[in-house]
Amino acid sequence: MPELPEVETVRRGLASSLTGAVITAVEVNLPKQVRRPRGDAQAFAEGLTGRRILAIDRRGKYLIFSFTEGCWLLAHLGMSGRLLVKDGSAEVAPHTHIVLRFDKGLALHYQDVRQFGGMAFWTTDPFQAAPLVHLGPEPLSEAFSAAWLYKKSRGRKIAVKSFILNQKILAGVGNIYADEALFRAGIRPRKAAGRLSRADCVRLQKAIQAVLEEGIAAGGSSIRDYVAADGHTGSFQRAHAVYGRKGAPCPRCGRPLKGVLVGGRSSVYCPHCQSS
DNA sequence: TCGGTTTCCTGAAAGC
DNA sequence: TGCTTTCAGGAAACCG
Image (cartoon, rainbow, N blue to C red; front, side, top):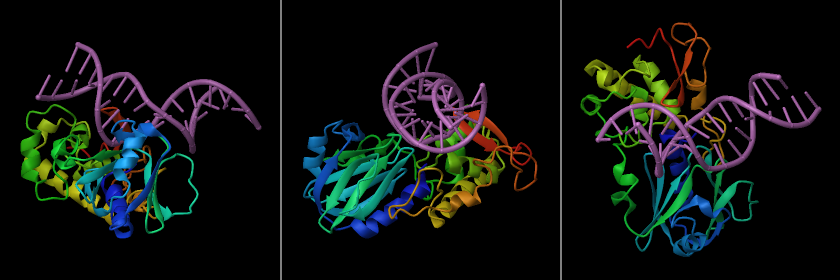
């Protein structure tokens, strides 16, 4: 499941191998994965062909390819999406919905088993429009502070876990890193966001930044589907204290970890250590 | 506006 | 062994 650290790892891999490359051909095998213009594989392919990649950026869980002549490509990996840089002669694997071919003899394969992700072609600045313009601050930027978190959460009855998973509030946090951050901060996932104390916010802000930075350093968490642009897996899943460990002993106190549903998301926490 | 639920989708795992 | 059911989840749509 690609969250901020996984998408950032993919971005770094793509940027190092594809910056400056020119798209020579676009193959769309599943038009519904073209999100803009919606389902229009021909317009998508014609719009991208001949463009040179100037930069590859990330905003939340979105990847943004900037091209010459003022156009952009947005990619979202959804749950099971992969962006793999391969040799131009490489075989197209099952569930490969879009292939971008480049002048360097390389190809970018977009695979997505569960089809929750997609690609979008823009001819106007996507940073000024939905969905990017509605995203909350980057968790690793100075805009995300404990004071901001405290102020933003006032009056909110929603569970703190649902609150930090909301991309319009904070961009990039997903289910894995939310559980891990709440564990480190000692806060129960179902606590109402509006009831967070200033001290809670200080611990939570630090915990979110720490787990994301450690996740990036480890090349992401490889659960089920995720691999980096070069096909390598990340290793942060080995450092998970709670995610995916329901019933296992808490790494801090040894008591069994509890699984609950919060906002429809499976969540694991330690009732003893997460008492706030 | 807010907060909760449903929908999309497929493969792995669990259950029978 | 083989079939059926359940579960996983990001984001948008929908509803009250």
